[in-house]
Image (cartoon, rainbow, N blue to C red; front, side, top):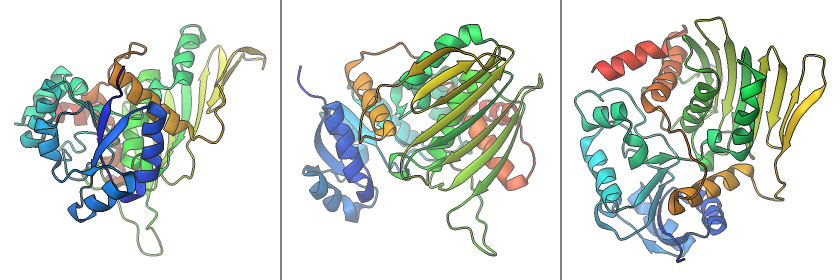
Length: 341
């Protein structure tokens, strides 16, 4: 079988990492470009491939198998019909579009655009794939299997960090909310705090209306209508990926991390466990991204429940809103506004 052929759209500091990922996935890189047109020559030279000057032209007509939007910048940040037309044109030619950043990244202005339709009917999942998604990790697949007997999750904590070259803090927020929704559902109230690496004495920047260009950490408390609760710590300011999940139920506790998980019953006895295969000197997030790119290019892999985009996007934007208001915010209220526009 011939190799899948790929175009990268990225920033120069992402080149080394993404080249490793594509080599691991056995994907051939034939072109690269940058949102900053002045840097397109640099990224193409660094990667040893042809320069790509126009992303929309590449989406509309380039003979390619895969486009990875590592840094979409302004593309599909807002719900622009022209950007969606580009995704549809690529999809019509069986080009797989993957992105390290959520598309769209803002809920404002979705009403009256074609994005509203593809979000509501779920076809956004066929047009573009957000990667890497923690919910698709092999360890999480194994975890779901034991949750059938673990019983309803009463409370949980999630710590998730991935280096910035594989996605911004906004991407980690989308990723984490997708995971939490699958584990415990949609919360009634989200209360969040945000800290930027630029924060200092007298300076405390807050998120705007978009998930793009966010860096730093979120701490998030989730409250559910039936009394359950969850807490998250998210960061893109880490040198190596990390994940730590704790789940509590009447059947005990599950502790999960990059190495696997253990299920302890209420008396502390281990009753089930899973160990991830060790791959030395490779960041688990790079492995996860490479494996998901392989699945996307070959169509071979476990059957995945698609992301509920309106729900997850609304959870992320309730989080952004809470950081600005200092109050708990309702993701269902955000989703109602999103779908009623």
